[in-house]
Length: 188
Figure 1 (spheres, rainbow, N blue to C red):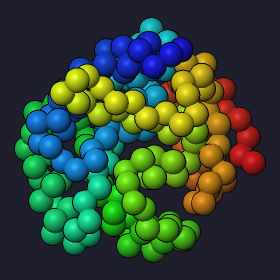
Figure 2: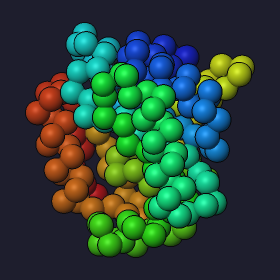
Figure 3: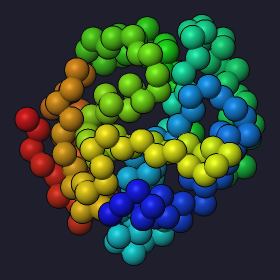
């Protein structure tokens, strides 16, 4: 699967297309639609399911140096006002402030980031290390490991700075129950 095939598959999910359009309109700094909603849409296309089958939420990353909760809350409300009509769960996170709450929530260190794609790089699985963003010229696609794992329905651990085998196994088990076609590689 190449970039254009990936993008065509991802945009078969109307929620992905609408969210990407709204993120462009909202002009949030360094905003990306990321992770499972993209990979799982591709899985659904490959498995001939409804494009939105099994997707629990749609993750949006942006990067704003204002790390206050109040600033992030304002952005969360703006995004929800723009896409709330879709009736899907939206998770909006300022990547500039993840290091402030991640260690307490997950018990693992998390260094400060300098851009949204740094957050994508830290995902638990390599197949979800993907993001799209709408631009006036079309789409930017971020996929540091390419699209083979997504297209081949392979779940591969990302043994990065915040890897947890227990969290990986829990996530993989949930996905395997919904998409029995996936192949889950063991944690490293």
